[in-house]
Structure formats: C-alpha cells, structure tokens
Image (tube, rainbow, N blue to C red; front, side, top):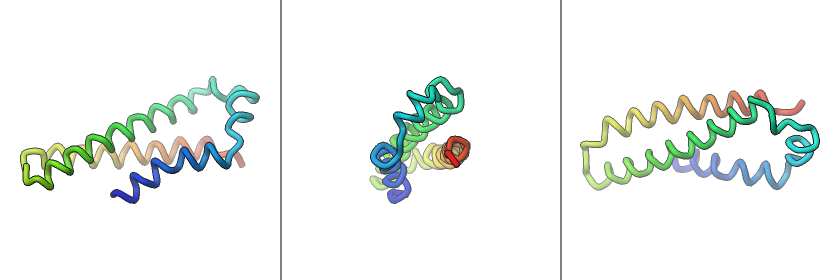
Length: 95
C-alpha cells in the first residue's frame, strides 16, 4: 500500500515535469472542462482517504483494534475512488 501511495503522490510531479499541461489547460481552454474538475476532486478525495488510511493503520499497529472496521471501510472507499481517478485520467489522455 505504501508503494501505491508513493506512486500516486509522484504522478502529479511527473506530469508537471514532462507533459505540456500549460498548453492543454490554458491555451486550449480545457481548464473549464467538467471532466478536468471531476478528476481533480477525485484526486483530492483520494489523498484525503490516504491520510485517513495511514492514521487508522498506525492505530492498528499500536494494537487499537477499535478502528479495524473503519480501516476496512476506508480501504474499500480508497479502492473505489482510485478506480474513478484512473478512469477519469484515462478519459483525459491525449491520443
């Protein structure tokens, strides 16, 4: 899970450094597209779920089994939101 989180944190850095985001978003006015904003909100939600997952995971490591149900529910939500992030990202890929 740590490697997935690190990959998802590194992906915006890669896209910023190696893709022509300024031309696509500003010059071609794609910044006003609904799918771009949906993708951005999904990414923010995914990062928030990652923070909650890490917090409950650390509590589980400290033998606080009261958060086990919350951690499982957050894990399922994280997988669902990550799938939507991948889907919306695939819709935004330039061919």
